Length: 189
Image 1 (cartoon, rainbow, N blue to C red):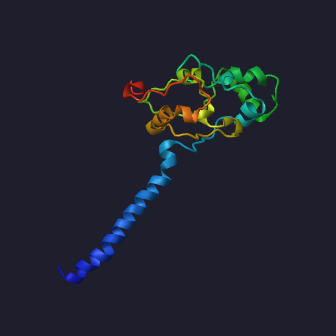
Image 2: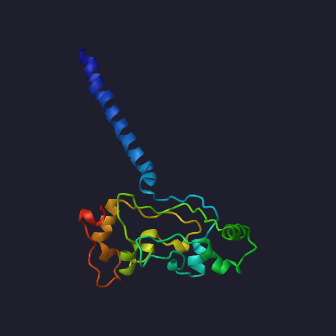
Image 3: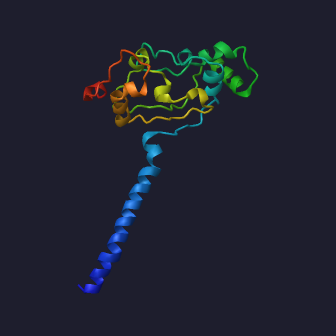
């Protein structure tokens, strides 16, 4: 091989190729991050619902609508009957509430799009966390300030382990809580 071609390849082509490969990897990593860890995910819902109004301004406790979090591993999505506890009277002429009333009258559930999801291969129990005094906002963010609910935390193994290891730094008001388990079988059952 000609020495000038070899010099050209080593001085120009190789560094450009390495730079382009590194740039591509870096851009792909950062641009696809929200899709990988779900941060920012906020799908349109069948009926507009403002957590800012309900949980914020009206100060309705999360557990009023999302029942079961103290007894079950799941925080349930509210049935239309829970909404109708207030909306048989409150704002019943608004378009969204009229649609809600129709769903309720027909006995059809609203098909809310799930926002927060732990991977299927991981076990997570809401009741353990809630009963230890960990506030909903610790994982779900300040939903009381969100008109449109979105995912603000990553539900990856690394973020869960970081929280288990740093529970006292993240939740300094919790008393009598040990760090969370770090062994594989705590989450992978």
